[in-house]
Each structure stands twice: as structure tokens, then as C-alpha cells.
Length: 302
Figure: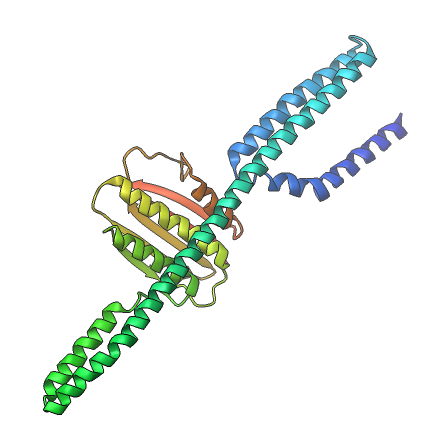
């Protein structure tokens, strides 16, 4: 009896070690950080645990035939495994959709960058083409001896070049490109924007993750401002503090939004993409609603 218990204990410990080493990382990776998903899986496991316990009690109490009890026990085990398989596959499908959304967001970002590059190339061609005419005008003024008028013309030309210069928000190329694309979209929609960023040229956050987090935050801010129907300003602040990157964005929003535990109750795929990318940096994301403004704060550990 003692030897049987020892063997059983060793087998249990071996099964636990195998689970912790090989299965546990996979099981934890499937639901991710979604607490509701964990609650669902835990509830299913508890219900089946109650069923398994009932089978064991009936078996040891001598109720029913042992063969039938074992057969039904095996059937319940198969059903339990099938239910878990369906749950995990569903979660993986949702995760796949979120990653697909992230890829499409990156493609959209690259398309925006391509369009911006084409606009800059066209602007550069126009400036080169017009430069000859400006030189001819300056030369004509100098030939007349009208030096003051030539200087005034050159100053006006410099001012026009300064006005046409693209906005530069920070040294980081990716962040600056995302902010520039957002700034152009907001300006076309007549939306006021305030941007402040100090992201260095070499950042610890991968470009793809910056696209996933920042692009979705800014797009949600634009959509929220459009839906609100009020004249307000979108405020964006990106700061590198110690070993953290802090992104804060505030925008006017429509009435009726609900926040639960620092997160919007109705989450879009874009927010799931933000959470997924922020999770790589043990990040934190919180939403606040105050005086008709929705504020999101994302903290990334670098």
C-alpha cells in the first residue's frame, strides 16, 4: 500500500513537472492578459472538476457498476478536452484576427508614408522648377539696382519655403512619420491638434510596435473627435522617462462611453492591437473620461 502511494505521488509530481515545463507556457499564452477569458476557462475547469469528483465518490462508495462508471468518466474526460480545445482554438482565432489587424495597420501606415513621400517629391520638383523663375526675378531686380526690393523678395521666398517645410515633431523617424501622417489627416478634417514628443532617434521600442500602439491611439482619437461633433483639440504627449515610454492622448468624445477597470467596456480590434503590442513591454494602458474628454495613457517599460 505504501509503495503504491509512493508510485502514485511520483507520477503526480512527474505530471505536474511536465505540465509546468511544456504545457503551462502554451496554456498561458493562449488567453494572454484577458481576465474574462481566464474566468471562462477556470469556470469550465471547476464544473468538470465537480463532475470528476462525483465520479470518484460514486466509484469508491460502490454505487453502480465499476466498468460503467469508468466508461462514463472517460467520456466526460473526452468532452472536457474537446471543450478546452474549442475554447483555445477560438481564442487563437481571435488573436489571429488581432494580428491580422495589426498587419493591415502597418500596411496602411506604409501606404501613408508612400503617399507622403510622393507629395514631398512633387513639392521638391515644383520648388526646383520655380527656383529658376525666382532667380530670374532677383537677377532682374539687381540689374535695375533695386537691392532693397531684391532683399524683400528673397525674404518672402524664404518665408514661403519655411511654411512649406514638413512638420518635425521628434528625432525618431518612425514616430515622427506616424505623427506627421496623423497631423495631415487632422488638418484636412479641420481638427485642432497639439503634439509634443521627445522620442530619441534610437528607441528601445520596435517600429512595428510603435505603429501598432501609436497609430491605433491616434486613429481612435480622430474617430472620437469626428463622432463627438464638437470643436475640440486632440492633445498628444509622448515622453521618455527613465526606462519608460509614456504616451498620453486626449480627445473630445461622444456621450455614452463606459469605462470599467481603466478600460473601455466596448473594445475595438484597434484597442486589442494596442494591448497586444504593449504586453511585449510589460506595459500598462488606462482610459479616463472627464468633462467630455477621453484620455488614454500607455506606459511601456524599455
